[in-house]
Length: 324
Image (cartoon, rainbow, N blue to C red; front, side, top):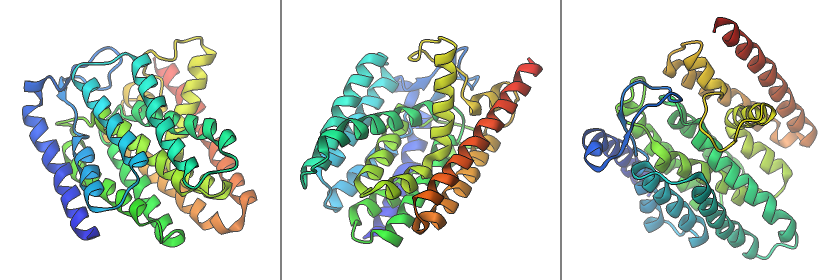
């Protein structure tokens, strides 16, 4: 069954990307560059439809709780509508909070959790935050798709090693990996189509929802969330810089580290995306090795990675400022 789902997901990821790259302009699925874009030419978007179709196939073939897949599908459809027509940030955020509340409520109520009142706001913020971070990080060719392959492959490895009973999570993870692999040739090194909010919002929600579903303690959570460490590090550090400088946090910008590497320092998009993916593999593989060693070692490794990221980020931003 898993082999069939992988084949279908691979085909859906590639087929949807190919068809939309040719016909998206007819339905207004086009990303027109502006002064904050990292691309120069109008490019079709919505390539994440293949991910949505892959998830629907999984839903029909694998027992998955409605509270898990319902919000995921709803947010993907919201992203698709946004790709075509555009939606205000306030409406998007409101729908994301509502859909996430449905998911988190389902997790905490079955079976009921004694710490539900405390966990609910924490999980809510984590899932909504991750969903938006993934969306924010989808700004250059290949970065969202490659990071999807890495993060969900690592989730699949973790499940196989530690939670073999979590069958539906494993199926979702491998389906997402296959769909991303199918999509990537149309998005990197040269993009004939972008993933769009359809895909990036879905990937962010699915990743964070799986982290919440699979975490039974803090050690699980730290290990699983580290599979997207580079996105969190770039997202949080950029959010802090914009807050420090008094920028409206809901406005579009080009201050993420990956954007500076591509726009100010002129590195090819594919090199940046591959660099992020390789560094993410390094962080996560060490974290997997430390998983059984205790919270002290896990926390120490994450703090070390955070300090290195902050130091490197400051150096890169400083060099970019000097060059401009």
